[in-house]
Image (cartoon, rainbow, N blue to C red):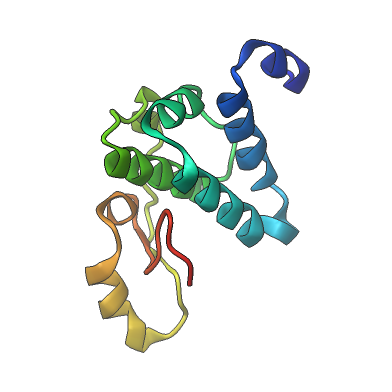
Length: 132
């Protein structure tokens, strides 16, 4: 579906979610795009969040699709909102991805990553609403 059509069909929070997740496809700015999405999800109320994530994000790489799905699931859990059904269509990564290349941090990341990220084989220290 084209961006123009989505802009006409989706409510403002859903359009913003689509725009922010689309920005994650820019390889040069992926960290900043994920940080923007992170901050924005943290600011939404329960109703806005449910409306925003009602449609799946655009086509993303498996890593980014899992990262966005984990962020969405985590935000929904924090706000007490049922996670959207499109989360189930995102298969977890087959290989683990760690937020740091330091081997000495892996055990910490394995034990402290939020559950939605661990389920998707992504091991990080910060999550929605957090800053590193």
